Figure 1 (tube, rainbow, N blue to C red):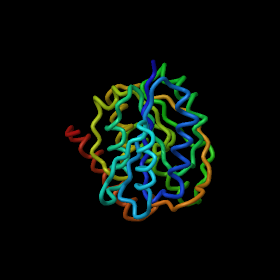
Figure 2: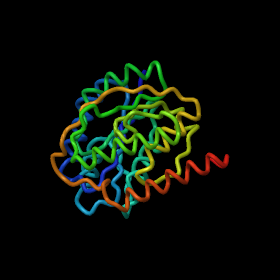
Figure 3: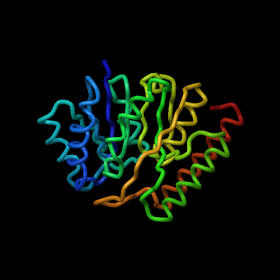
Figure 4: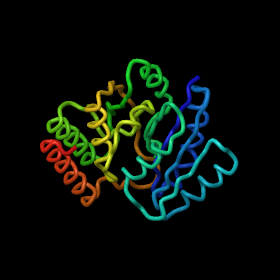
Length: 232
C-alpha cells in the first residue's frame, strides 16, 4: 500500500489551478493506493481560493489551506507539506510548468532513497531567472557542500520520516535550500532525477523580485554563520 500527498503552493494561479488539480487526479491518482491533494492559497488576490474551494466541496481528496495574506513561497510550501497525512509527500508548483507523467520514475527511485529531487535539464524561464537559479545552486553547494544540482526545482518526493527530523525556519525563497541542507546533515539519502520544464502558460512569476532575492541571500548567510558557530 502506497499513500501519497501532492502539495502545491498557489499565489494568483486562478488561470492554472483547476487544470493542475485535474492533472494530479488523472495522472497521479492511478499510481498509488491512496492520495490527497493539498493546495496552499498564499493570500491570492484573484479567485484561486474560490476555485479550489469549489473543487474540494466535490472531491474530499482535495484540501485547501488559506493564508489570509501573502506570506511567501517557503511559507506556502512548508504549510502544505507539514499538513500532509500520507506516507510519501510530493510537492510541485501549480503553474503547469512541470510534467506529472515523470513522477512514476520518482516513485520507483524512492525505494532506494529518502528523497528524490528533480533538476531541470532545460529550464524554460527568462534568461535572468535561469542565470540566478544556476548561481544560487552553485553558491549553496559552495557554502554547504554538494546538496543538489538544482536546489530550487519544485519537483521533490520524500518520505514522511524527513519531516519528523528536519525543521525549516525559512518562510521565503530560502526554503528549498534549507530543507535540502538539513535533510543531508540529518543523514537522509538524496538522489536526483532530470525533469522537463515548460514555459508558464498564464499568470506571472514572483520569485525574481529583488526583495525576495535579497531576503534569500540574507537567510543563507545567516544559516551558514549559525552552523559555523554550532547553533544550527
